[in-house]
Image 1 (cartoon, rainbow, N blue to C red):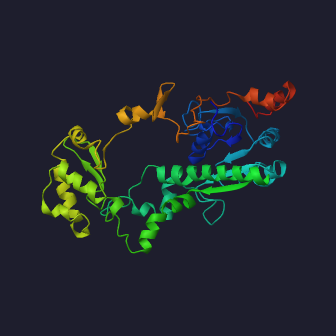
Image 2 (cartoon, one colour):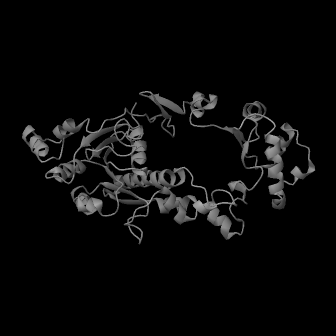
Image 3 (spheres, rainbow, N blue to C red):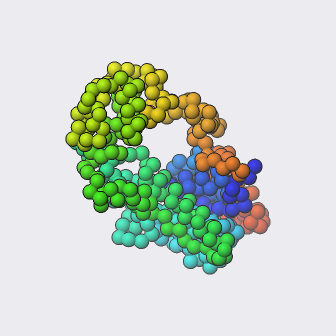
Length: 375
């Protein structure tokens, strides 16, 4: 069954970080993707990569004679172009948005960077940690008695970057159907992560956001955080609503009067310390037997080996296996045109096939090979 983006043609300039993840989502939803590999596999988007699934690969070096003409011919028939280079790289290759949109006015030109296409930091290097640091988001992560904790690159690269790139591309595709005109999507991780932080900026303006580790959703509240069990494993507790909090006290047989002051911030440190002692009295499995499946807002903290085997994840098919690799299945779930994970791809696997589809004959392909543009 075809996905919701069946018929959409995407050209991907192989890069690292959030750009290939965004393209994976488009491919899962049925888009026909051709990945341009510069004969060297990209980090986490190269030979046999799960993130690189569902594409066809053309291994060609845009800097070699004749290569840019081939790529422009490919882009002429595309609906979307995705690139994740520093600002100016595509222009120097002769593949900038002005050139491409002049040839293909309906093209949606997606650009993924950390700092954005403009601004004083636009030309310099950075990584996820640096981008979320600039937005204020990183400052709110971690414990009060130490420097902010570097998180996994979910908030920056994937959340503030890839997901906003996909949102922009889909919006631009929808608009192009009405106007007949494409446009440039400038997706910056700093912009996206800042927007993800909207609620916390609002809390700050209201005077309801305090120092790191002193707030409701950053571990400051004793009823919202992670705790160590007797076996050294962890559980998460989040009974924010009063009725769920009271259920926690009931099931855990906590009758100490101090715990009734759920929203007294002055008591949070002492209550957290006491709850730490209580959780240490049982193993994680014992806490699961008592609390999992109730309205306490509880879940065990699973590692990457354990999560695919949890009954809930197995029942929903949250994880899948491809060529011996266990990885998350496509999301979200569409009832009529579901997404599907494509096969894993080798760099340059489809080069000759794609070049022939573009109408190149044996002589032209040979000339590209002689120029070092293709292997």
